[in-house]
Image (cartoon, rainbow, N blue to C red; front, top):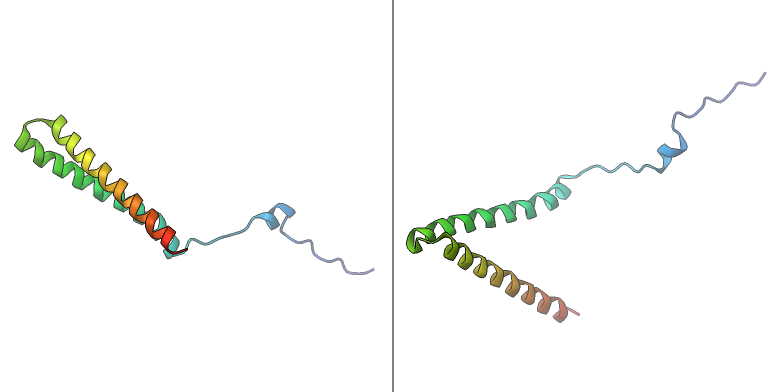
Length: 88
């Protein structure tokens, strides 16, 4: 009688699963944008609070800060667009 080969302990479904380790570098790709957004929001709230002391109106302060942030984001987007097209 011939000896039997032991059955493999992995199933066909396990062969399809690809294991990936989360490297420290890939963790920073997730953390950096979140930290940047939180920092910008914290600074915006601080500026709104400061402007509210001077204008006595939260609406004016929030509107001004929202306008400035929107303008900065728009200019950053346009600048990025121009640098992307000049690299081609």
